[in-house]
Amino acid sequence: MLKDNWLTSKEVMKALKITSCQLMHLRVSGKIKFKKIGNAYYYLVEENSLND
Image 1: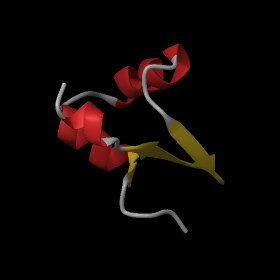
Image 2 (image 1 turned 90 degrees about the vertical axis):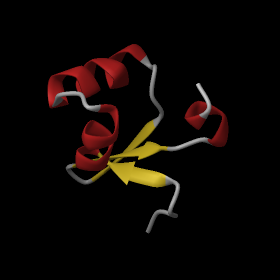
Image 3 (image 1 turned 60 degrees about the horizontal axis):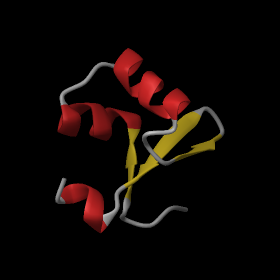
Image 4 (image 1 turned 135 degrees about the vertical axis):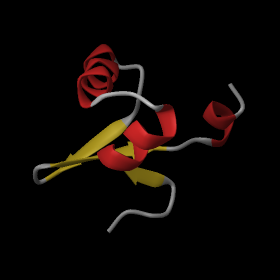
C-alpha cells in the first residue's frame, strides 16, 4: 500500500487540529497533497512541510 509518509484523514485532522470540512478545503484549494484510494484519502507528509 502506501509508505509511512502518508497519513489518513483522521491522523491529519488530529495533528493539525482541524475539522473534516477544513481538511476538504485544503484539498480543494491544492494546499495539501493527497491521493484518493477507494473512498479513503491519504495525505503526503513532506520533510520541509514539518518545519513550517
